[in-house]
Amino acid sequence: MASRNDRQMMELILHVARSNARIRAVIQDGSRSNPSVSGDIFQDFDIIYIVKSVRPFTRDHRWVDVFGERMIMQMPEDMELYPPDESMKGGFSYLLQFLDGNRIDLTLVPVKHSKRFTEDSLCKLLLDKDGLFDGSPLPPASDRDYLVEAPTARSFADCCNEFWYTNSGLAKGLWRKEMILVKELYHRVIHEALVQMTEWYIESRHGAVNAGKFGKYFERYLEPEIYAQFLATYVSADWESNWRCVYATIDLFRKMALEVAEKHGYEYRMDEDLNVSAFLRHVEQLPAGATTIY
Image 1 (cartoon, rainbow, N blue to C red):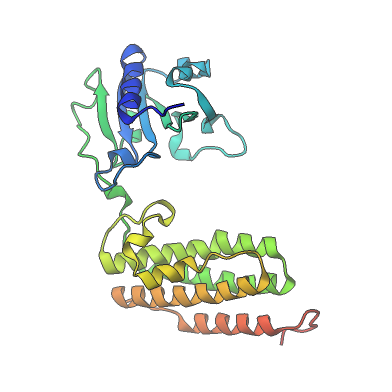
Image 2: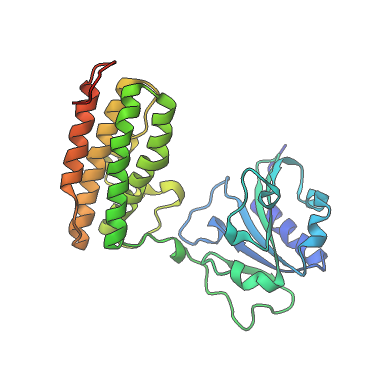
């Protein structure tokens, strides 16, 4: 099966819109609207159809068959376990992965909610049958809504506190050899705080830039040695590696946090850092079956 090219996909998306009287406008957002992104073969087509009403489309989902043979489809607004974000209220999404490798993330938005759903800076108008946007034209698409902002003093302090406090709790999971708990706590809380600090570190050196979803552009902005240290914070499931990873993570967090603090004139709580670091080293040496911590 040959993959449809970009031109064929876009012609199909617009043809469906032009042929259906219920669809009044088409908006593109996502990476295809971002002038700062170089395209590749895996770029999704992030599309918004502005419609008279969503309900006629959702009565029978087979209407999306027109886009091609699907590998799998997801409808977030129709899910219980993984409900959509509140910001999507009023819309309905079809996430369509096709057998030829293409993907369309399609959102239906009623005309009455069109302004709210098109405030994202990557929104680009492709079709407007009724001049819905004539009175308030969309500005040129850019990634301005996705640029890293400098932290406030409070946000910086909160990030540091979350990182160090959770590390103190991680210590007992490591000592008890509760691998699943350790992995979840590390990746859901500690590593998230590290990612946040990394974004601020990048901002302190490069200004307001787009670091990418889940840090996918970190390599562009981090010095090679810092990027290598960041990669070392991902580790396999054995105990010796996990302890090494913890120390690598706190060393990197400290290095970046100190620079961010200096850049913005914020306080870095070295007392919390030293206390938790010492506690981790102590717990690592505690024998199994110890009856007292100290």
